[in-house]
Length: 629
Ligand code: ACM
Ligand code: ZN
Picture 1 (cartoon, rainbow, N blue to C red):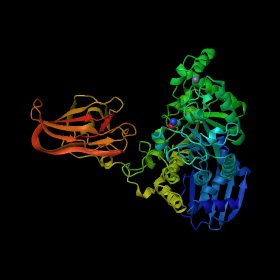
Picture 2 (picture 1 turned 180 degrees about the vertical axis):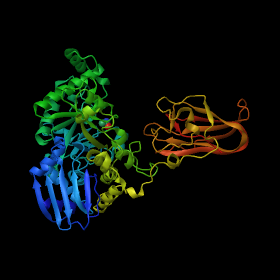
Picture 3 (picture 1 turned 30 degrees about the horizontal axis):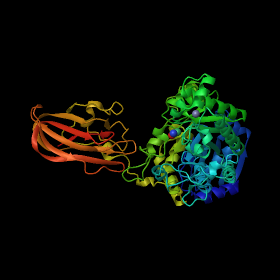
Picture 4 (picture 1 turned 135 degrees about the horizontal axis):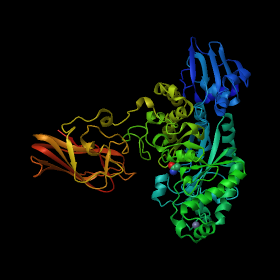
């Protein structure tokens, strides 16, 4: 174990200066310079500590530890080797002498890496595992298969790797633009790769040392275009994105793959995906229709549920538990399934209500593919803004009835890789936000104070050790108009609408454009009002006055279909009846990436009523304030 400590130090370059992340349950500091290299005593499985921790839930008992660091060395007590391992992680972060008594809030503290959209190799994964283990993350979920590439050696279906692991286009976006074509191993244009079974064994051996479980995800029945490409007999028809639950060939393939997966991975959980299956082909596929008739299924949702239930029987018969995205609730949840809630928390809450276990990974707090700082300066994300503080603010128990707490296994951060072409970019998106997720999963809410200072030290050490983490010291934070507001002459004035906003994006309704509150980086933050129609509003300034400027900032985010207006018109009136046009502001150029563009004009005129009209170009237009001066 000493060698392991040395290895952890060496690989992370950890120093005495690190603060504790995640925050421990109790820390009593003492004077002196800590000696973290000399172990004075180690008691694993002793009676005294078992007594001290007897009232903890079983998982917390098993991971608890007490660490005392003095100028002479350190002492550890734990009930298990896992507790001892966590003591060493904390030891690596001790800045002062003292005693730490610690145990986790949740049993499941996860991170998901998508290695389908852009492949990440064994060495990269091993490097991340060390940092994750230092944060006491104990579940590494590998999204191994998806349309963009199959990433796991399967001996019984070799085309999954010789063909479906390779594609054209240097990155995911290019592959999409090139019509999602696959290639073959060894072809000059082939981009991709996969983990061999030997790679997986190495990852699993390291995981065992790091007291981490590796959960394999084999996606079904959606996100499976690469499988249908390699083995067309498992699709409703060629080029289908979904597996065909009507055909026996599909179950033969899935069970054969899962058999190899179960043989390879010791994980108690096998993740079967289950999300976002487009079930349209099933409605016309003769095999799917025959299956529905034979099984008495009345909807395609029930047909998906049939597949998941049948796969669950197979997984359970092999002594494992099925884990799936929250869509597995639709059409009826299989009897023993655990639900991973990603479309908000509703799926997890519903699973718990039905007596199942759940892991929370709601997009708003846990999707690390969102940008973490001002999107105008960040590399492109997948849409949305998730700064460190927001990830850290999440409380997975906040909506759960107290008598069901035991069904909430924990929390997970997900890093989807559509827009993350390089390994450096992966690290940039992971750190330090995954430390926020780790603290949500490990620490009691009352212990979460001072996170920014603690995580900054941890993150600086990580950067020094050669990780391409985002330098949180340089964070700009929210859009200035959101943080500080906008002062102008129309604040508090009444606005009348000719056309109302889109129901999904009301912001503050009639108050939105004159409340002095600017929108943030994200269109969904409740400050931006969204329209699929013209914006046509009139502001009553209450008395005739000089007008020098009228304008408003529009958000452009092509991903979710939000664009700049085609043009903006500004009209003035003294009586609210007769308007004269004061300015027309044309769109100069449609921005290709996320941006915030002021459409406004200096004006010389007098008015009581100011009318602001914006014509959409395509899709949505989003506006936060109409500024009048
Ligand atoms: C997911 O984000 N489609 C699970
Ligand atoms: Zn079918």
